[in-house]
Length: 419
View 1 (cartoon, rainbow, N blue to C red):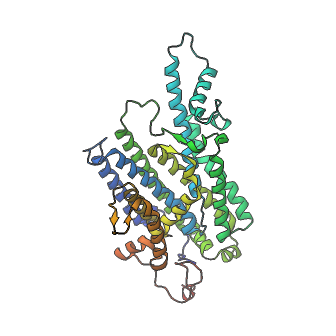
View 2: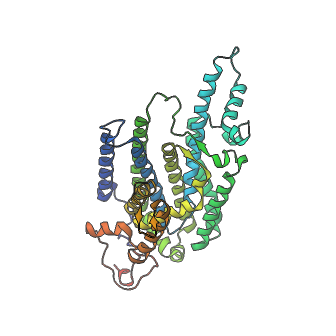
View 3: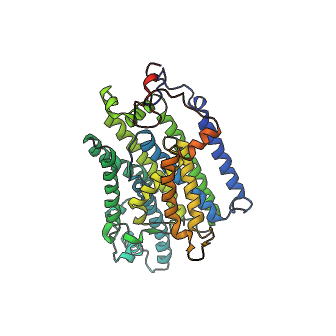
């Protein structure tokens, strides 16, 4: 197992005992300030509004990558369904955004009526506006709280957390592990995606929820300013998520989940409730992913079932692997790097390469390049980009001696057990 300190007591001053966290927060703060000063809405205008939104979305992807690294890199659960929780968070906040904005439009259109509209007439008009595209005229039951922002914000947390709790409890109590658990999480994601594609799912089927970038009641507020607000919110969420994740992996709790990753049977033999620890991490990371999704999709402006497809969760695992699994800053680096490079390649900014007999269009070849990068990192740089930072800043674990006592990198070795 990984390095277990002589004392399992958590340090009194968490940040003082983890200076790397302070470094990360300081860099994030400087980055946030720099983008703000260069933005169109609050600064010089050197950065376009669309690029500020791209950076804000990237911070959200970094947050869900931290969740993925917690559940996979530290607890050893390769979940191929965490982007489903990300999408659920987006749908939860998207329902309120669509309902509230449509309500304003309906009320404005009915002001010229001879008689004031009844609440039922308003509700019917809102339903027709939202669901007319799928041939429906009534609000589905899952929209019963869509009028309330506080309740929908609670749904951002409760719905992903509850789904993860139920799924995790059923899977972990049956002691499903390894590739079988990964397949189950992927099946859950596929089932949810296929259900949402149906027009009678209550979420507009393949059309999804659109116009999410328009905040109700702020029609006069330019998108340049709104993009900065969401960028600030995304940066704050990432900072808090990074703090929480580092707190979770520190102390005895962190040692136990690393032990589960390295040798689950041994940890169970020592008397720890392995299923309880795994269920806690699985549920916590689902909630973090839901919050990240709730911040991401108002900046994207639209969400549809394709966002929850299993391939999205596979991409998430690729980001973490490229950044460096088992390193929270590695997950952030991997997500940010792949997201920004992907935007460059798929946004038409990367020039095509003419080979004479064939022209490489990066829009078509980006996914191939991403897959090749994943294979190369797995084979030749298993520590990912984060490993390069370890070398650059001379971050070393204690010297390794003897044979591995666990299958994962960082496990303790034979000669170290007596230390």
